[in-house]
Image 1: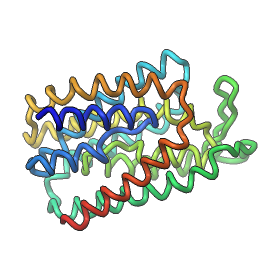
Image 2: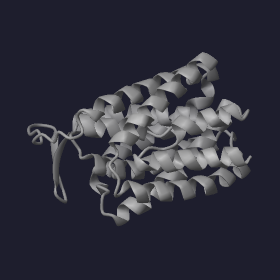
Image 3: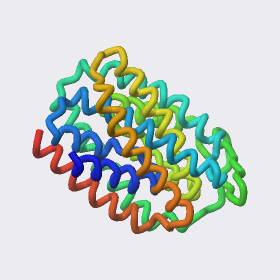
Length: 259
């Protein structure tokens, strides 16, 4: 049991540094421990909620969280997460596992591609549909019509598969909207917590929840996420994201082959 607790602590610590939830690792770990996919998914969403809000509290104190951006992006993500969590029981688990693996590969490719782009901060685009943002010393723009369907789709997959939307949100914010990495990571932590909460709420109607397991592991990831966010505030994320991308690909291949 000590090994399992240490792994959950380690992953929550590492992922909190880059604004991601632990669904990419929590679900495979729970599956490896013998839990059924619906239970692993609901437990993962509970842990994602704890990790996200815990890391967010640290980033908020450092004044790195763009609240207005979070509200706009997360509204449709949360709706999608609730629908995904509620409808997850209607899909065969092996299809969900394959979709989960494919999603991880896509996220890893986004993160790898992001490495060569994150130092470039072009001038914000202007025109119809673009929302101009000024946050502290940063300036960037968001194309609102694209945000709505993208964030809903990310939320639905998050709720159905028990993952955090930050897996795709952080790369999208940096690559597509030129949002600075520090702001994207910090803002993602808030959205990850909200998405996890809405996805977990959908699972409440299915009864696929082990409360003892949730609270036991929740204490461990709470400690890990607090420490990870504290280090992230003063640590450059480039090497961490490269390592994360490699691990995501390995886990994705393992999930698909295991299915």
